[in-house]
Amino acid sequence: MIRRLPLLFIFFLFNVTFLIGQSTEEVVDQLKKEATENSQLEQLAHELMDVIGPRLVGTPQMTKANDWAVATFKKWGIKARNEEWGTWRGWERGITHIDMVSPRVVSLRGTQLAWSPSTSDSGITAEVINLPVVEDSLEFANWLPNVKGKFVTVSMNQSTGRPDYNWEEFATRESFEKMKANREAQTRAWYQQIRNTGYNSRTLNRVLEEAGAAAIIQSRWSEGFGANKIFSANTKTIPVIDLSLEDYGMIYRLAENDDKPVLKVVSKSQELGRVPTFNTIATIPGTKFPDEYVVLSAHFDSWDGGTGATDNGTGTITMMETARILKKIYPNPKRTIIIGLWGSEEQGLNGSRAFVEDRPEVVKGLQALFNQDNGTGRVVQISGQGFLHAYDYLGRWLQAVPEDIRGHIETTYPGSPGRGGSDYASFVAMGVPAFSLSSLSWSYSDYTWHTNLDTYDKIVFDDVRNNAILTAILTYMACEDLEKTSREKATLPTNQKTGIKQEWPIPRSPDRAGGQDKN
Image 1 (cartoon, rainbow, N blue to C red):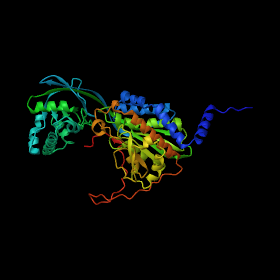
Image 2 (image 1 turned 180 degrees about the horizontal axis):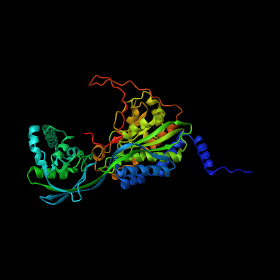
Image 3 (image 1 turned 45 degrees about the vertical axis):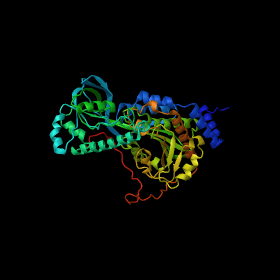
Image 4 (image 1 turned 90 degrees about the vertical axis):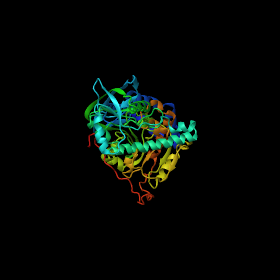
C-alpha cells in the first residue's frame, strides 16, 4: 500500500532541504530580489497613511492600524496578535475650520492640537488679543481679565517665514547676519516676556483658560516652508489651535496694530473615555533555537498633524516588508523572529517599555533587535550601543550585505548606550543588544518630524526598500549565527562637563494609564 505524504509536509521538506543547500550569498540574492521585484511598500504605505491615517495613541485610528497589521501579517502566513499593555485617554479628531471674519474675510490654515477640547457645532466667534509686555507677574495678573471671551495668541510672531537655507542662498551676507541678530534679540525678549508673567509655556494656557479665554492660538513653526510642529493641547475646556506661520503672523500684526481681528473657529472632537492600547506582535517561530529571538522593531503610533508617514510609518512598513520577505524566502529561521510594532512611543516609549516588563523570556533570549525610526532615508549609521563585542557580530553580519547598501553605512564601535529617542533604548536599558538603524535626514527635523507635512508624498521608496533589504539580511545572519551575541558592556567614559563617570541607562516603567490629568 502506497501512503501519500501531505502536500504541506512535502512543501516544508522541500524548503528546508533547499535552504540547507544554499550558500549565504544565494539567500542574500533571493532576499534582495524579492524586495526589489515584488515590493509591497507602496501599497502598505497607502493603506496605512492614506486610508487609516495618523495613529495617535487612544484614537480609533490607532485601533484600526493594530487590526490592519494583524490581518496583513496573517495574509502573509505570519501569526500576529495585539497585546494589550495599558489604557489611554480616548479621543477622536473631528473637523477644524478657521476663518477670519473681520477686518476682512479669509479662511485660515491651521488645526486643533491633539486631545483639544471640542467647540460646539456653531463654533466660537471672538476677537484676537496678544499677550502683553509686562514688567512682572503682578502687572500680568492685573491684565489677565482682558482675556475673557477672547482668542489669545501665545507664540512669538516670527520675523521671517523663510528658512535659513533660503536666506543663505539669496541674501547678502550682511542682510543674513542682520536678520539672525534681530531674530536672536526678538527671541530673548519673547522668553523674558513669558518669564515676566510668572508662568511658562507649559502652565500659561491653563491660566488663560481659568481667566475665561475663549481659545488659545499658537504657531509652532518648524523652520521649513509650510511646516509646523503639532503636539497636544493642555487645556480642559477650551480648544487650542495651531495656525500656519503666515496666518498667525497676519492676525498677530492686526491685533498688535489695534485692527481688532475677529476669528470664527469650529474645531470638533470627541472624548471616548478610557480605551485599551496595544502593541502588535507578529512571530515567525525558530526551528533550532526557538527560545532565542531576533526582534524587528518600529513604533506604530504617531502624532496627528500629518499622517505619520516618516515618523514612523516608514519604520513600520520597513519591518512589515522585512517580515514578508523573510517568510517567503527564509520561512524556517533558526531563531524566532518577532516583529514588534509598539504603541505610545511618542509619549515615552510606553509600548516597548511594557513589552520588556511583560515578556522577560524575550529579553533573556534576545540575539539582537533592529529598530528603525528616524525618517524615510536610507540607513547610514549603526552604533554598537556600548556593547563591547558588538563589532564581532554586527561586523560579521554586515559583511553579507551587498556593497551598494553597506557602502552607505558608517559604524561606531562600541558606541554609547541609547538613553531614549526610540524603542531600542527600552531594550538597551535591560542590557541586551538592540541597535538603531539610523537614516539619512531628508530634512526630517524641519519638514516631517511631528509636523503637518509628514505625509505619504514625503516617503522616498527607494531608500525604504534599501532599508528593508538591509534589515532582512541582518535578521537572516543573526538567526543563522551559531554563536550567541555577547552582552558584555564597554567601560563608559567620564562626562567631560560634569566629571562624573557615565552609568548604563536604568530601565523605566511605562505609563500604563496615560492621558490622565496629572495636575
